Image (cartoon, rainbow over all chains, first blue to last red):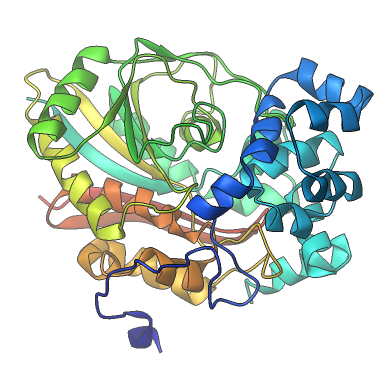
Length: 129
Length: 280
């Protein structure tokens, strides 16, 4: 089985990198990076505790300050990780936003896969069997 | 001349740093994971490296998406970490080695690698977690450091082949330094994990074990993968394997495996630990 994992060398360029043929998977490529620039820039600002407080105080105002579009604003309001990714969010930046809501990577994994956090943890654990 | 005393592949998951800060290392979830680092720390105590070259990817602390270098080398006298937004405590600054950094930069450029050079560089969990795993007494770091960032955040990423070649050139660069430094190279990150999308939580234990086996004697086999294939086999963050390939490349020809451990899951990830020494 392992032998089938080794592919012959082929150039990895595809004209549409963002959409992949891998189920449930997108690549954060140039298209996504352009689409999500304002959103990711806002999330980057959350490295600073004062900015996290400013967001907590007025989430919509803070989003508008960074120029988020309606889809991004709506996804932030709903804390909808899949929608945030569809709107160009990069998961490392979204993790900073999720941190403000007190959500860690298991919480957002559970949300994206439609599982409870407990079910998601069990799903991860089962990967070791 | 400087000597490369060995290479270590290790996870850099933020949850590890948080567990260490909360002193949870003896809890059932963590015990076996941390226990596996004991012999590696004993080896470090024995060989006493003076410099750690840490290969990792920044996750949005030092580099935003306005400028995303493919390969960036630190050339500062000191590196600090900082708030990443979700609660990892900041640690004591890390001492750099700017003279060796610039030598490495010159040598890599001469070997046709085009770099970004950083005289200021915040180091995030990708750098910090491996440092504290290997040297848990964070009140005094016993090594000087050179951080090397390899982009695995925004596609296109450098190919695995390019990263193995980069590592080989890095090894030659270190060994052409006239000082008596004893250098350990850390390849950090991985192994399989996917944080984003409906496939979140994807872990591929057989593939991780396959990579940990092949990277010892046949790294060129792993270097044949495309990034897309690594995403398919190891998840969206699985391409962090390239950081390990840089480490392996730096060791050059034949190596001996001294320690190896695989633990799953740690947070959302299949976590690998590998200690390699050059075969005599």
